[in-house]
Image (cartoon, rainbow, N blue to C red; front, side, top):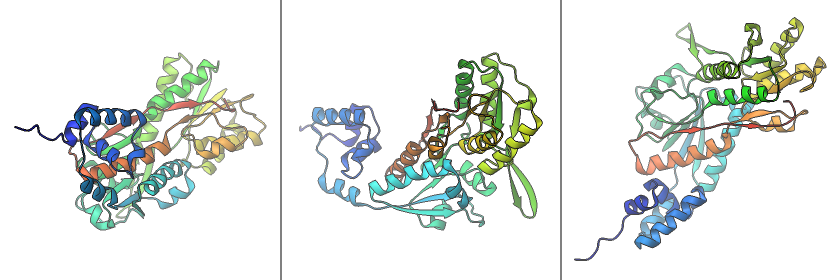
Length: 353
């Protein structure tokens, strides 16, 4: 009796990776998306097993083109937010490399019964949702979204979420920020936060929705202060009206006029830090000589301002790229297990701290 021909499952088992990764490796169009170390393992597994993929099936899959949608509830954020632009850069580049089509949508007010209905509503094969907690109806759809749908959300991780999510551990990131400042000798550290809640109007009523990102960052800041045995005064925590640069500038000006500033300030994101930096420069409170400043995200603008911004780096570009790969995998395989990938942020030391 002849030995059975080795299958893609056999190769995945031998290489200790997923079938989806093997398929991406076998396609000339997506092979570059597989990490170099994984490619080496897969090549060894193929040689060892004598695996010979069916050329026609491989070519057919390589030539398929999908409509991949990017959904956001606030389209203006895509233009004004460095965070969104970082993720979008990764998405757009990866879509271009893999030859699929990209569609950008704003969340409609239409009420849908299930997350599955989003695909027909927007005419897409897969969907990437960047700001999933900025619309009450969308939140409900995502929280009840099955894992096999080719839908991926970004950040705002919740432990009870069943769908696919790529997220940075922002709580850990803010702890790292405090520890970095403490390690450089700063003992009086404050926090300029983004708002704790988003406000919506639904059926003429005002609805407040807690912001997971803001909550996690505040907890991380408080834990970092405690772990480093530092003093924290309540007046050293200030909350901006929004997470945008202009509002942070105004809030920092108010704080400067009141006085009693800490020696260093962590900010809820880079846009807030850049707005705060402008107000500090106007008041001749130079960074880091008078006040050290720490951002969060590592957006492009933070690299080119003067002084350049010390920050906590989220791998925004990588998350955008990975989201495209994950959506394609889900389209082609529909695996029932949710992919929930955690990214650990890191300090990028520049001039403000």
